Length: 227
Image (cartoon, rainbow, N blue to C red; front, side, top):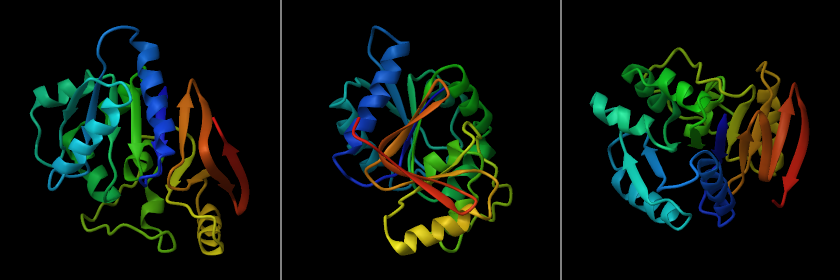
C-alpha cells in the first residue's frame, strides 16, 4: 500500500509530502497525466479549499483533478471516477461526520480496496485518522476533540496501518502529557505528528517526513527526518 498522512497547517514543509504523493503515483503509472481526487469532509464550503488544492498539486506535477462529496448522496458514476484516480485525498474536518458519511455511502470498503491494490491514498488530519484502525482519539477530551454531533458509535476506521494517527501534535508539556495519557488508554501505538510534518507508508514501511513522536503505553520516542 501507498499511504501519505498529513498533519496539517500551511507550512512550506508540506511540499515534501506533496512530492511523495506525486512520486508514489508516478511509480505506479509511468506515463500520462495523473488524476487526483479530492474528498472533502462535507460539501458545504468545500469549493475554495478544492481550488487551493488544485493550485498546490498542479505545481507538484498533477494535471487532472476531480472532487466528490459523500454527504450529498453521490451518483455511482461519481464514485467510479474517484476510484479510477491515481490518488485519492481525504481532507480534514470533523472526523465523526466524515467517517459517518463515508460509511453510509458504502465507499468505506472501496477506499480500503483502492489502497490495497496500489492506489495512493492520502489523508489530512481527519482524513489521516480515517486511514488508521480507529478514530477514537478524535473524541478524547485532552486532545482538542471534535464534536460527535452525528452520534457515531462505531469508531473503527479503515485499519490500513497498525498505528493510530494523531495530528496537530505540539512539542509542549501540555501536548506531550495529553498524548502520553491517551497512549495508555489504547492498545495501538500512536504516531503523533506536528503540523508541517507527516508520514509516508510504502510497501509496509513507515517513514517520517519532518518530525513525529511514537507513543505506546505511556512511553515516547521522537523521530526527525530531513528527507
